[in-house]
Image 1: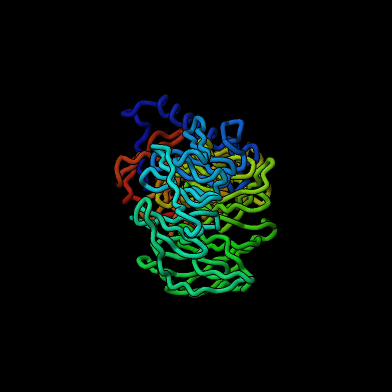
Image 2 (image 1 turned 120 degrees about the vertical axis):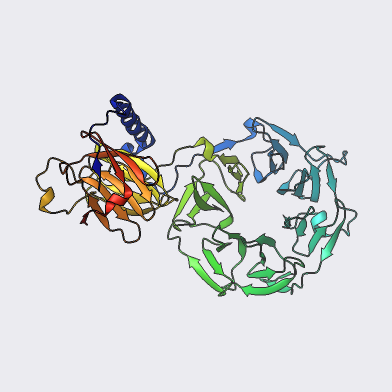
Length: 515
């Protein structure tokens, strides 16, 4: 298996090896320092929000909506004006009845950005277009006969189709499409008008696109599959309960459709089967679940919904675990969360603009002491010795109390062993060494190689079968530590007290002990 190279005189660098190992241990102790404080038990990140208010220059603490323009500038709509935030301070824009280039009204319900330096703003006096460069606005009301969304706020949404320059206005009364900066037309959708609790509806509430490019829309207790070209209804789906009133529809990275409604219940909708599955939240949420957005944190993906408690509901889309982050303060309402191109999560609230930047919170805490032993580990016993990123995920070894763990790319625990080479029988009894520790990891194909006190351990990723290989002409306690590949077939393996071993992978066909 492993051929002894003896004490390595050609390398002749014991100080370098010693310093390398000391640096490696120090690095992992820094990264996993928080384990000693018991913080790694949290499955969700320890998120901290910053808050912007009138003291920071906002025109109003009551923030209704957020967007980002093509140049990366953040814009916030409030109950008293439009705000431009460049990361340092705010510029404010107000309605002025004596200035035809000002915004329609100070009460802003929503802001949407196009790719031509324009903001499309829903105000209490209808929709207007605001150029972020010239800082001039254009309204579309011509007279009292103008369609409702261009003269009042009636709950419209603005939507941009991929590859198109001008937006659609998704109004309760009709679907409109701008054909220029001032011209728009009414789109025939084939929508069959219906009544809901005494009110009549004749158009979509909102249009959304799934991960495959298919377009969907909803209104009250119905979801519509619509044609991507004509925007006409292709298929209609009724909610499982007629009293349901859809608040939002969100597609996650797995293209799963999540439906929130005016209640504390979420549904997962499968249009292929026309099935609705209620997503259990237990006692996690007791108020209305509202708008949602997907957000990435340290490789993990979360659906983030604003809720009425108030707070933010996080759903891990890989594990489907949930967590609520309450917004502390005088917040009475949280509007639709927004994720910008820098992956900053923004939450407009009635008590200011909250935001969270993962780049400002560089470390996440991963539990490594919860599943290996029946008793609780002490802080000292839970020191991390080594971590290696391989094709199969992350491999971690623990010092003193021992054990190795394998996590996938989303830091979900896949497999763990409390001892590395336990159960070998009398050949290992009474020896002055540990069966618990692993020291270094390397993956080759479907095998992961682990250095141990007793030799080279291999783990088959298909069967999880483990084998231990020993050199027959050295003592049984080999005390292997660092693996340094020369190439894909030849390795140098450092021993703690027996020099350096040199091996080719073809030699791993010697007899092995199987666990």
